[in-house]
Length: 298
Image (cartoon, rainbow, N blue to C red; front, side, top):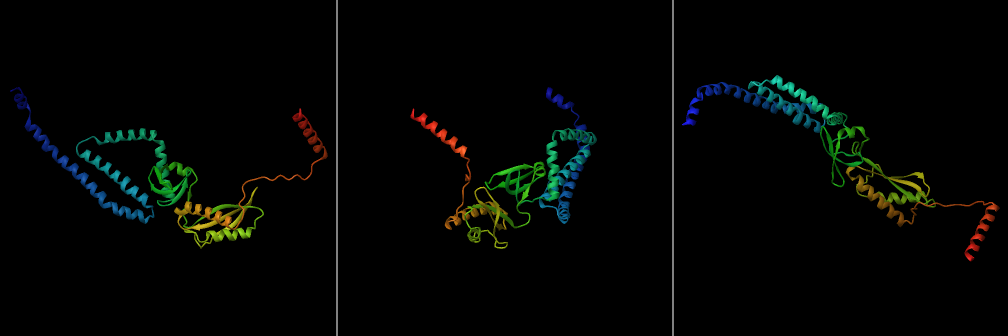
C-alpha cells in the first residue's frame, strides 16, 4: 500500500508532457547526425578526386579524408546534435579548448612528429613501397602515418620510426630513380695484373641474376691500400629490393672467380725493409748477444 501511495503521487501527466515536448529535439538531433554523416559520405569521393588532381600521395589522401575529415565531421555533428538537445555547447567548447591547450603542452613530441609527418607528405622523400635506409634501418616502407613511418626490414621485422627522427637524419632512398648501382670492394695483390683481374671479375658478374646489362657492370681501381690494390665491382639492378642479395652474390662470385684464376686476394700484412744499419748498432747488438749468452751459460 505504501508503494502504491508513492506511485500515486507521481505526476505522470507532467512526465508524459515533457517527454512529448523533448521528442522533437531528439528527432532533430538524430536528423542532424544523419544529415552530416550523409554529407561526409557524399563529399568523400569528390574530395579524394580533388586531392588526387593536386598530385598528393595516396597515403596522405587516405589520412586527410578517412581520418582528419571524418573525425572533424563527427565532432561537428556531435556538437550540433547536443545543441539541439539543449546542451550548453559554448561552455563545452571552451572546456575542450582549455583541455586541448593542456594536452598540447603535454604532447609536444607527438605534435612535432605530426608536423614532421606533414613535411614528409609534402616533400615526398619516399613513398609506400620504397626501399630506404634511415636511422641505421634498411627496409621497405610499409606505412606512413602522421606520427610514425613503418618499415619492414630484410629480417621481416617491423620497425616504427618517429617522423621527427626521419626529418632530422640523413635518409637514403634506394628506389627513387629506378636503377640502383651496387659497389662491391675487392682487393688484389700488388703483383697481380689489374687488366686480367678486371676481365675475370666482369666475366663472373655479367651473367648473375638481377644484374642489368645496360648499364653494363664495370670494375674500377679506387685506391692503393697498404696491402692490396683496391678494386670496386660495380653492377646495376632495377629492383631495389634485390640490393642485399645481389651484393652477397657478387662478393661470392668475385671470390670464386679470382680463386679459379689463381689471382691472390691478400690479407693485411706489413713488410719491413732494412736498407742501412750503422756499424755502432751492430756493435751494441753483438754486446747484448754476448751478455745474454753468458747469462744463459751461468
